Amino acid sequence: MSLEDALTKQKVATEQISEQELKKTLEADGVRFVYPISANVPARFDLHQLEDIHLLTPDAIKNKFKHIIDFLRMPYVTDNFGDDHEARRIWRQDIINKVGDVAIKLLKENRLRSNVVNTIIADIEVLVYLYEKAGMTDDPVGKKLISIYHKIPTEIGNYQELDFMGKMRVNGELSNIALEVLQLFEDTKEKTATQTA
Image 1 (cartoon, rainbow, N blue to C red):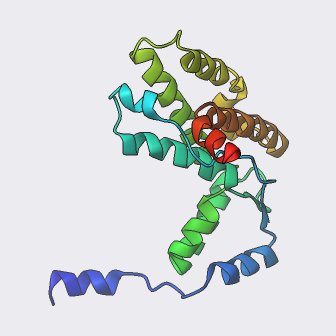
Image 2 (image 1 turned 180 degrees about the horizontal axis):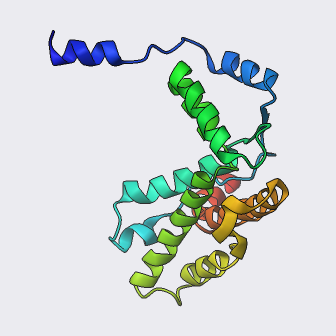
């Protein structure tokens, strides 16, 4: 038997299920998907100033903004595990093992997950770092970005230990901050051109 055949036999067969079917099954088990009220996310961004710093590729910069936009559109996913994070991890991994990619997308795209929150914080920190590294902290956009960054709640450092209501409060504040960052880089020239046309 070849190595490829042996590895193929070891793969766990996953059930074929649609996202909607999985969602219904999970909801029957007490999982709730609460989608946020639609945020006024800008349609276009002016990233030339960030790109001109040349510390990140344009694609890497766009990826930071994509993370922030995705975060603002993600649902809050709640379950019956309360503070038992280990039981939740085991349950989530079991579903992922059974169902595969559909479960990954559905369960890991959750605004309340620490990894999601930490990614958004890191993305904003990178944007601030770019302005600091380029010596552009007195630039109007740089100043405003740093000001927005300093609004990040201090509780973010122990987010994992917060109770549900604490996570919801911090998440709400972070959502406002994320939206402010996006609006700071909104391409207002494009917006003005379409409004006057």
